[in-house]
Image (cartoon, rainbow over all chains, first blue to last red; front, side, top):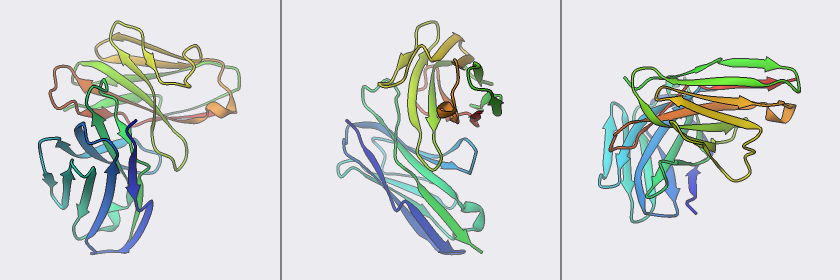
Length: 113
Length: 117
């Protein structure tokens, strides 16, 4: 059974710092991996999707990498801003899982002005 | 593009009543929709997978007679919480995948907060 773990569970940083969020998964047979952002009481906003054949994806200040063989992904946020404060979730789509995503527990990020 | 909406965004009901939540794909056809629930400070837990025109597939531990799912069209899936009780209070989120999308990306709705008194 696929398990997804995110470390740290919570993170507080001053504005302007570059930071890295970690995601690990137990079964490397994945179709893709997605990073999401969730604001309190809101739904999920897709940030980046990495296909299993890809190593990384970039969008603005965000960069996500994927090392499928070691079961790891990182989300790099450059020059963090208070508006980046949210919970960040990673989710993997295993092969032959009927499109069922497996989510990590999330990392709650607080960027202080 | 790829916008998913949910209605209502929040609902408060008395114990014992039934509540229907709608999930719509606004600008695309979704052959598959998913229903999740999320408790405070926890991650999303998949409840069921809904395919248009067929019965939903429920995850282990989810009562299909309590959480009725109907996927009558390629743009609409509904979740009905029957005889709701306070322990059903949660945040319910749906997602949808585009028909024929090779990336299998899921697009999520804004969620519905259910409070059962």
